[in-house]
Image 1 (cartoon, rainbow, N blue to C red):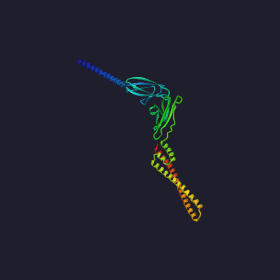
Image 2 (cartoon, rainbow, N blue to C red):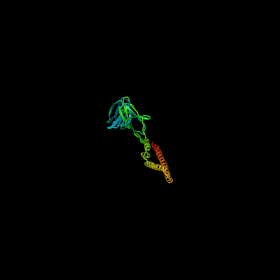
Image 3 (cartoon, one colour):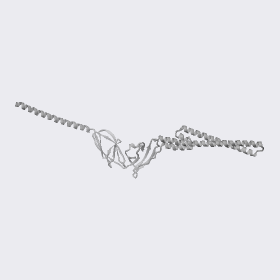
Image 4 (spheres, rainbow, N blue to C red):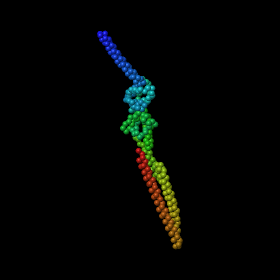
Length: 315
């Protein structure tokens, strides 16, 4: 009986020892696996500390703002070329290409030099280029109605503003130590307004030319035809009037110098008929001149109407 009890106690102690040993080994294995996973996550990570003098500059990585100096950049990407830009207002933007090596820690310091700012309109329908480069390629600070484009060295710059259905606006600007903030007043002209002004000038010179300039070819040909016919008719009537006036003067002189009733009556009748022709020629001339004037006015009114249509179609 006592032997059986001792055996059972020994067996129980052995069982407890085995259970505890298994638990400890499981805990150790778990910690080892956890540490291995952490090490795997750490492998391939790189970090670069970016410092600028003066501090507080914005950092852009591949065009995306990621922070303000001093800043530590960490990325799991390795062996890749990245474009980094450091920009601060009134200082020249520094742009560099960096290579990120796996499991590396490095530091870059940028000494920023004084520069200037160009303030441009903050409108989505404008396309603005500075020295033939879109402003999207420059670091900028959006404001309420304007955008501050930063980081320009002292010097001269050429600004071009484009907008659909408008003529391009261009201006030369200069940034210097005494003028570090440069802005401009934008005065763009609609193509329709310029075409209207030019069409009015053309129509004032000769009706129909303005319509041709506005690409209303059928109307232009019509007005030119009416004016050409009217002017030709006026020239013809004026020529006939002058010729008939000479004949009338001869008949009138012959009537005044005639001797005998038959001769007097003959020249008087001829002078009367010639005078009637003169009256008809003069009346036709004035009617034709009135038609020319009406065509001229209708031509101007048509240009104004065309301009109102174009304005409605232009945003």
